[in-house]
Amino acid sequence: MPLKLFLNLYLRLAGLTGLVIVLCIGLFQGIDSVRSQVWQEQFPEPLMRWLAASPVPEERYHWMAPLYDFTISDARQLELSPIARERLGYGQVVALNNSAGTRLLVLGANGEVLELRVDQLYRDISEAVALIVRWHLTMASVDDRDEVVRSLSDALQVGIRPVEDASSLPSAEVLERVADSSMVFFQDDDAGHVMIRLSSGELLQVDMPPAYAPWAWQVVFLLLSVVGAVLAVTLFLAVREIDGNLRTVESVAVRIARGELGARVEGGDSSLVSRLAKSFNGMAEHIQRLVQVQREMIHAVSHELRTPVARIRFGVQMIEECQDKAGLQKQLDGIDGDIQELDELIDEILTYARLEQGGPVFSLQEGSVTDLVRQVVSEQQLIRPALTIDSQIDEGSEQWALSDIEPRYIHRAIQNLVGNAGRYASSRVLVHCHIDEDNCRVDVEDDGPGIPEADWEKVFTAFARLDDSRTRTSGGYGLGLSIVRRILYWHGGQAFVSKSPSLGGARFSLVWPRKKADDSVL
Image 1: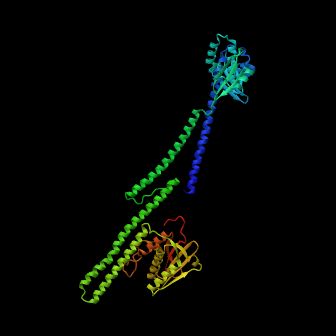
Image 2: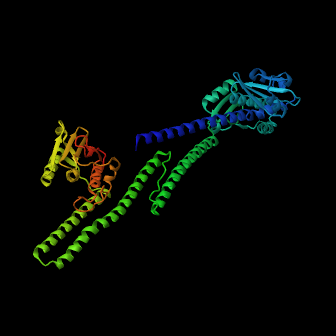
Image 3: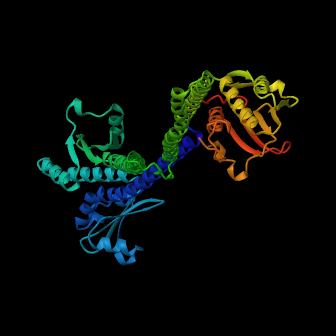
């Protein structure tokens, strides 16, 4: 996987993770603030309403004032927000938090405001409820005690039960503290309990509602649902984007299958799909070029074969009419030459087709380029003794002469260029070789008429000739330079033509990397 693509995916995942975390934190804080406020008002509500229902709570529970700062005030004298006043008017219990603790407010029966200040809401309210329970049970007779317990339990929404057997006894530490102070608050799991001892020595346990739990299962479930929803939406959007791009590729593939070879996939913003589109377009261009080459080859081959076949047919007809041995031999030699031409043409066509339709299975090996240049020059000099064919090896090239090549095909490429130059040269052909640490370059120059710049690219087209002659004296079939370019392509290089600065004719150049890349697949 490319590093850029990995970093892109990693940053997107990290960004999504950060977004989910921030969203969950914000959602939790918002929900927690609302739940905490609601719980702070619902938990002490039974106690506050019990006090508000009492005719004179400040006298009846006079012992609460020094313990919990229990006061009764005129609503007009209190500094309250309009919302708090409105809620008090609706009969709601209002909890106001400040640095000193929590203020609990409720409207009394006569329009006054009962205010209870506590430091630790859960503990202080639990102890206050237990004190009220103990006070009422102490004041009640033994016969009425059960009725008082039921009344207090229903009104204050707590559980009140006597401690009678050993199984219901709390820990020894709690019992010791009860013996010392007559009332002890302790928590078991999430719920609080208050153990009280009546004046008669009887032990009672007041079971309070559960304390506030920030991480209630409902909150956890909501956060998990939000995380799942965010991930699902993100996955849906990502898959929809990829699916849409893949459908585009599929649509183009269908169009190509129907014959629209010019159809291409437009590259999108996605790195994955853009790479796929690039590869797909490359494949489509290759297919289109192969089809075009096939059409051109069929058209050109039919034309190229027609001339020698016609000459062979004419020669056979002439043999029937020949009366002397010399004429017969002349026609036989002509037919033999035509057959040789057909053989060479078929070899050129097969070589070009093999290179054009995916290339041969190159087995690159280390070989000397300078030796190949000298070999081709000596071979062509024997074939064309009327020309001067020289090789020029730059100083220093010998130490880099060993290159990763397929010797047979590089030999063929240089040979095609030298042979092509020999057909058009007036008197001289120069093969110049320059090799350095990175690249190999072979230039073949001649002193012929040269090639117009407008036709520099055309000469590499299959079956292309710059003249209109198609006789054997003009030489070639228009495939030699196409074969050269394909050989260089499969070596990772290129072939091009220019004007010779020294001889004035054409200069054909071959350039390819001296060593193949480690990850190249040929």
